[in-house]
Length: 154
Image 1: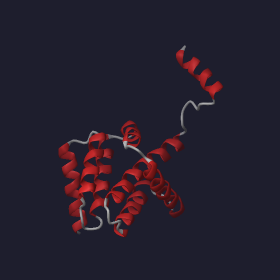
Image 2: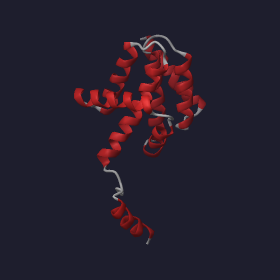
Image 3: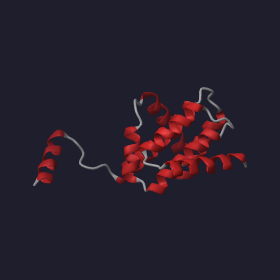
Image 4: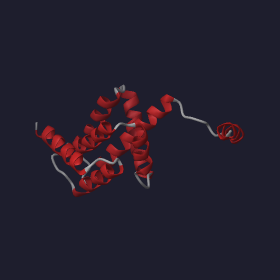
């Protein structure tokens, strides 16, 4: 009965009942992109290597074309500038991703942080905070950091 009432209410208020699969996929892409951009922005010296790491990671993770990728990064940068917390992004990821996928996002964040061969304290703090919001354990967090550090050395 409540779901029928909610559907009727949504019809009158113009609220959509459920986002489409494409809208959900785009929201997950944006949430991931914003977190990666935030790592890039956490370092006071904005390095081209970090921006390139964001782009490469998003291209590999989502198999996007150049135009689509450019739009996603631009939207993520704009969204990151106006975001007041990370909960909106991490809650979406927690709802839709498996735990290993969330650990991989933390590893991707470390890859961005290490891209310029310098780990800033702000980057370290940010990734630690996001790992907590994604329910990534300390051991998984350290493992992701070590894998990213080793990959950056090669």
